[in-house]
Amino acid sequence: MREKTTGLKVTHTQVIVADFEGNRVLVYDLKGKLLQILSDKFNQPTDIEIVNGKMYVVNYKGKTISVFETQ
Image (cartoon, rainbow, N blue to C red; front, side):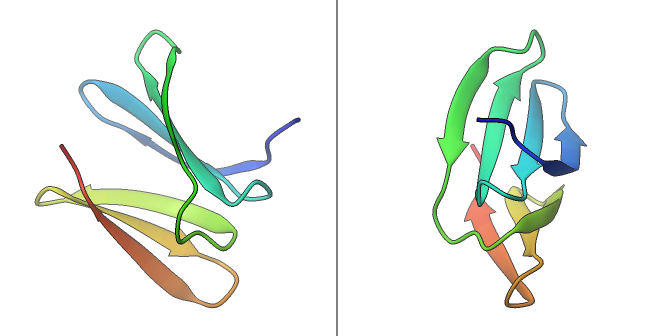
């Protein structure tokens, strides 16, 4: 399966990618190893931001924002 990525957030330890067509968010370490697949609450995610320990993911379809606590 080929992902259509639309959003990317790079932190000190991770690369977080919005997979628009797969309705999920992929979390990688800085070497490219897949750490986690988040697939809950997404409806064509487009953008990602992390502020004050929370990750905000913009969903294109439905015009909503999903909010998650980060570690």
